[in-house]
Image: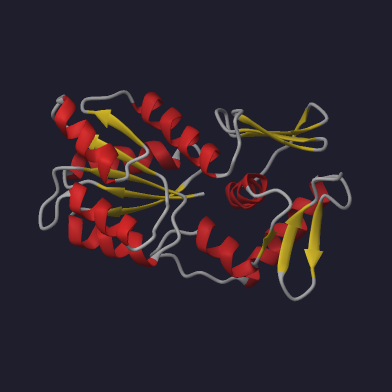
Length: 220
C-alpha cells in the first residue's frame, strides 16, 4: 500500500515517513501544498496524511481541489490547532479523519489502517481469504494459523491483493502501489514476486487472468 505524506515540518515529515514505512507501507513525501496537490492528483495513493498549515497552498485548499477533481483517496488531516472550527472545515472539505498535533505514531497508524480498510470495504483489522489471514496491525501473514515469512516486497504485493479480493489487478497497478515515486519501477518484477508468493501459498489462491493481471481467488 502506498501513502502520501504532505507535511512542511521536515523533522515531523521524516518521522512520519519512517513510522509508516516500518509497518510495510511505501511512502512519498511532499513539503508544500503545491507539490502535495500535484502528487495526489497524478499518483495512485491508497491514503494521504495531509497537514493543514502548508506553505504555497494550504491543506484545506489542496483537499478541496482533489475532491472537486473526483479524487476519492482517503485523507487524514493533521492540525496543530485543537479547534473545532478547523476540524469542521477539514471534514467539510472532504477529509475522512483528523488528528491533532502532537500525536502518538501508534494512533496515526491505527487511523491510517482504518481508512484503508474502509476504502476497501473491510471492517476487521484482519483480512481473510480462504485459509489466508493478513493482520494489518502486526503485518503478519498466516495460512491456516501457520505464520509465513515474506520479504517486504512480497508482503506489499500480497497486502494489496488482500485489500482487493476477487478483483483483477494488473501488473502496472501492483507496481504503482508497491514502489515509491522515485523508485525505478519495473512491472516485470511483479511476476517474480507473484511466483515467490505462489510457492508459499496454497495452490490456486493467486489466479492469473491472461492479458489482464492477477486475482486473489476468494473461493479458495
